[in-house]
Image 1 (tube, rainbow, N blue to C red):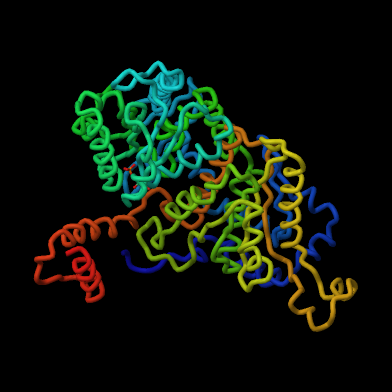
Image 2 (image 1 turned 60 degrees about the vertical axis):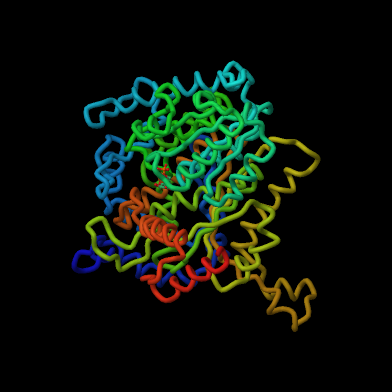
Length: 545
Ligand code: G6Q
């Protein structure tokens, strides 16, 4: 680590003003802010690209916003956005460009990386994916014994799993019913057992998704899958009909025995957690069909354009990032909740945990100095209304400040009875309750006895954003994904960290490899870990003698 610490107060002249402003505003209640300006709920809204973003229920005034926008300007955000969009190698610790935006650029656009046009390459692969997906969907692709594919198992972990699995779940409504999809990620044998149980190997396709094609979990699962398949077919030639790979590592893919024509490539300028729009999305394309997959890309591209070209004060991801910094760095909020009121988005908070926390969970700034300020908060969440009967108690009456994003769709995918209006009434009500609470006076007027009043008061003043779209479509999912990706980018620029590396996952991997060797060998007389780890290894040996 370099000498000294990174301070945002030194980097940004406006930081001190924000600190002073915070002192003035920290006790101001949202009730007051709404009373002061009866039009607040109409003014503090951005509506663009089919997204209605209401940020009026935040503990800000127009002065706060003004200062936060100055912060974005002082961070030279616009210049950094240009650098990303033009293919500069902004991931400096890995010397790579960061071009997930190229994955959804329309044919005809051009972004040159290392002398080659990234957009041309993207469309070649998309074309190959679409051909393959159509063959699987139509039943034209036959397994080794001539049967069509009825089960697709995507093997991959982290960025090669969370995006596709989330998108598959989110878009199940659009998925082909004749094919079953499963996502195998964990090295836990239970995951393998449960995913393949009852499947006919003759009708099963494995998609091995791994950027590096060396990740232990994925490789172990892939070899187990190969054994499972060959135990049935007893012929190596079956591999070519039941295994395809998505990777950047041609050599390793070939070594495993997957033919080049069964490989879908992507590139080092696509970060794992930003890779859903690349060939890593192949399983999703098979599920929803090429046209729907193209719609997802179109949605993401529309938000890329919005982020690239919209002035900061109307730029939704920029506003989302600034608001999160306001709570994270001034109010001291430690977490942020993602609360989609849409059952199909069940995995969206889990997916976002990686995008946000692997990107911005850093304590060293871009210059290699220890930061003297808070960076990425903890993101978590659950679909509504389930959370309301669980952790919302803490959000309403606990001692912690938890800013949250509500996400909802005006129109349901399944029109069943009154379900949708009840669902939507709940999301609106929660945002209202968090912001305005319930006072002692109101409770008294309702006849609540004095003894119970302290317990039944809702302080309110708990901030939230409301993100509304018309319907959960592939295009709208693409928009939501890009919205958060660019929020994370903006946060990273202001916090002066590299949002695109993830060295923090390395140490555990190295130690696990060493311990795996030791677990196999109870004859080792002298373990050299700490006393706790040594003891744990011995306990394992004893049970598995
Ligand atoms: C994501 C990370 C990480 C990665 C997995 C899988 O940004 O880099 O989650 O996606 O470790 O890596 P492979 O795709 O190389 O198997």
